[in-house]
Length: 408
Image (cartoon, rainbow, N blue to C red):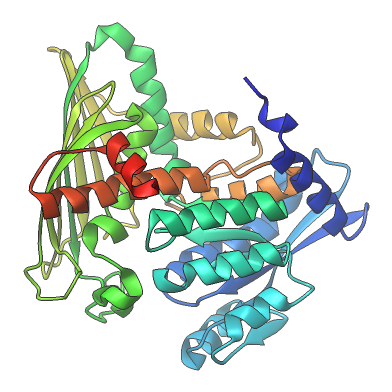
C-alpha cells in the first residue's frame, strides 16, 4: 500500500507549507474568517484560545508558532462590527466581494469558510487557487460532485482543506470507538442503533436557538435537518462502524418550507455492523437534544447530547446484569489527546470546536493532510443523498450502486 507521505499531494503540500513560512525564528499563520454568524462564534473564540496557547501546544518545535486571527469578512456590517468589538483584527472586509477580497489578501495564510452552504464551493476553490489552506464548515457543498471539485483543487494546488465534521474531533466519539474495540467479543455483535435528533428550528431568527435564518431557504441551504444537522451524527457513526450498505428513508415537510425537510425517518444498514434507525426533526419545542442508543448482544451504550447545556455529552453503558457505568471525562480526554499526538493539549472550553480548530492549525504547522478530510465529507453526503433518493423512489437504495450511478 502506498504511504500517503510518498504521494504527489503530500510532496506538493510540504513545498507549499515551507514556502509560506515567514521566518525560521517565528512562524506566523495569519487566519482570515469569512462569515460572522453563529457558528463563527465557536471558531473565532477557539482561534483566540489557540493563539494564546500556541507556545504550549507547539513547544517541541524549533520555530515559535504564532497563529493569529488577522481578518474578518461579512456582507452584514452589523455582524462584522459586533465580532470586531470582541475579537480585534488587523483588517475588516465589507461589501459583496468581501470574502474574495479576504482570500486575495497576500498576508492571509489560512481561511475559515463559515458562510451559508451555497457559497462554500466558490470560496474553497478560490482559496485553493490562491494557495491558502481552508477550513470549511459542513455540509461542504450542495452536491457530492461539487465536493469532488474541492478534492481536485486541493490536490492540484497542494493545500490543506479540512471538513467541519466536528464529531470526528469529539473526545467522546473517539473514546467510544476505542471502547467498542476493547470490549470485542465480550459485548457480542452490535445489533441495533436507535438515534433521535430533535432541534428547535434554526431558521426562526431567535437568538436563544441556533440562529441561522438562511437555513430556511433551499437556495441557500439545499436541504433541511438531515443535510444540515444530522450529517454530524451519521458521520460520527460511520467513523465507528464503517461503510454503509443500503438506506431506506421517509422524508416530510410539515413546516411548508420548499425543499427544507423537517421530519426524517430512515433505516441505514452498515456493511459490517448494525442497522441504524434515524429519527430527525425540526420543531417549535424549546428542546434541542440528540439521543443515541447502541445495542449489542450483551450490552448497550447510551449517549445524550444536550445542546442547551453547552453541548454537554453524557455517556453511560451497561453490560449484562452489571451496574450501569459512566466513562470518566478525564479518561476520555487523555485518550483523545494521546491519539492526536498532542500531549500539551488542555481542555479549554466545552465542546469539540476547539479541538477541530487545533487539528487544522496543527496540520498546517506540520505540513500534513487534514485529519478530517474532504473524502469524509464526500462520503457522508453521498449517504445522505442516497436517503433523499430512497424517499423519491420509495425503495431501498444500495449506497455503492448509487455512488457509481451518480458518478457516470
